[in-house]
Amino acid sequence: MIEHEPWVGDGYAVGLAGQRICVVGYSHHRTAQEADNNEFTKETIQDVIGGELRGDAFFSRVRGYFDFKDEATGGFWNKIMFFNFLPDCIGTTEKRYGRGTDEQVARGRLRFLRIIRERKPHKVLVFTAKGWHECPPTREERANNTPFSLGLEFPKFSWGTYDVDGFIVMAFGLIHPQFANGNLMRKTVRHILQMPLVK
Image (cartoon, rainbow, N blue to C red; front, side, top):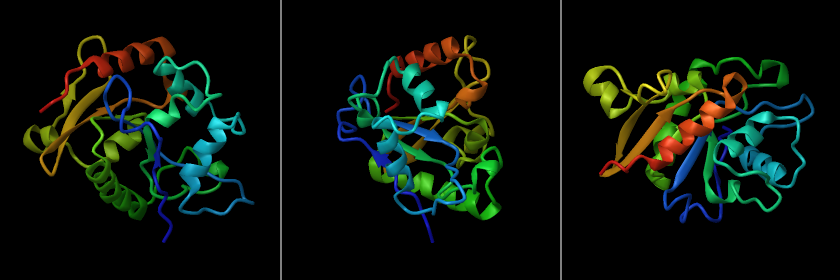
C-alpha cells in the first residue's frame, strides 16, 4: 500500500524562529503517465526547490506567506516539514479538487498522528479547510466539541492542540491558498509564529 513519506528539510530541527514548523496540504495529484509511489512528496518538493514545478501556485504562495521570496537555495522548504493529509494521490489531475475516499481519510488521520508523534513539530499549519475538518480531533474538540478561535482578526481560522507522548503540538486550521487573500495569510502566519508555545 502506497504511503507518501513526509518531506523533512535538512534545517527542520533548527526551524523557523526557533520553532519546528510543519505545513500540511490536502493531496497530491498526478498525470495519467505518472505512477504513485512512497517518494511522491519528496520528489515534488525537490522539483519545487529545483524550479521544475512551476504550474502549482500552492507551493510558491505558502512560501510567500512565510516571507520567503524565492526557492533558488531551498531556503524555506529546507527549514520545514511538509506532507499532505491524504496518504497517497487523490488520483489524476482532473480529480485534484475532490475529496479522499473514506479509506484514505481514515488512513490520513492515523498517519497525521503518527507523523507528529515521530517528528514533534511545535506548530502545524494546515492549509486546507477540508483537510482541517478531516484531521483527528484536537484536545479542545474532544473536551468542548470546538477548537479555539484564532482571534477577532482571523475569524475564519481556528486552532487546537495534540498531546503526543507529553509533547504539545499546536495545530492551525487555515485555507488553501487558491481561496485566500495573500495579505491576510501573511498576517495570519506571522501571528501564528509569534504565538507562545503551549507547554
